[in-house]
Length: 242
Image (cartoon, rainbow, N blue to C red; front, side, top):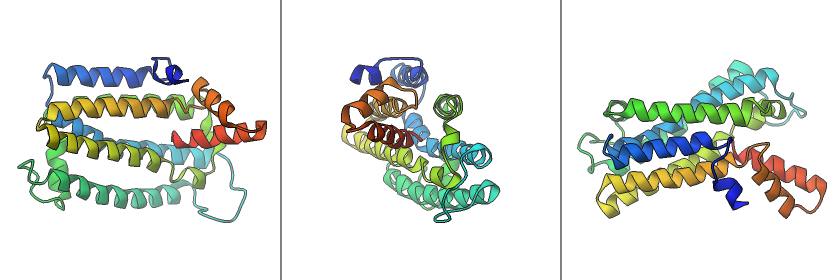
């Protein structure tokens, strides 16, 4: 099962390609290592944008709610609510992230100067290249894990609303670890390399939860107690991949 998760395959080839591409850039000094660290931080916004598209698709082509309980919004009202909800979340975690680098990077003078800090991060040399790589990876993940297998037909709008937060929490935890690597080793290169490797491992696990993944099927069969339990486990594990 571990080999099915880690070995390159058609499901995770973009994840491997992105990690190798970024590693080569860092190892051969073709890009500033801190740019890579900040790019992974900015990926939070990219994930949010893709989730807006998911909400629109599920609102139009997904399952209809079977209960009157919970969030009943769909379409534009749901998207606007998500933007406000997610925007607050991104704002809070941005302040926390910039606070970690405050004093370490001279351009970041105050964690609460979000516009100024984002402007500095976005305009770092090489950022467009790294972000393009991450966007392509997320686009491929969206296509294989959500669109091509018609996974959107299995969700109601309210059910998919909070799904990206699992990925975001894991992602931000890894970025925070990279900051501590930066402090411990006093070099951005080591921090960037460790961040890329950690994200590679996390992304490979997430991709392995694909609806048609053999690794997911093996995992569910191994720990399920009945066929119904097997189907339920597969569905629950798949939801973590959103």
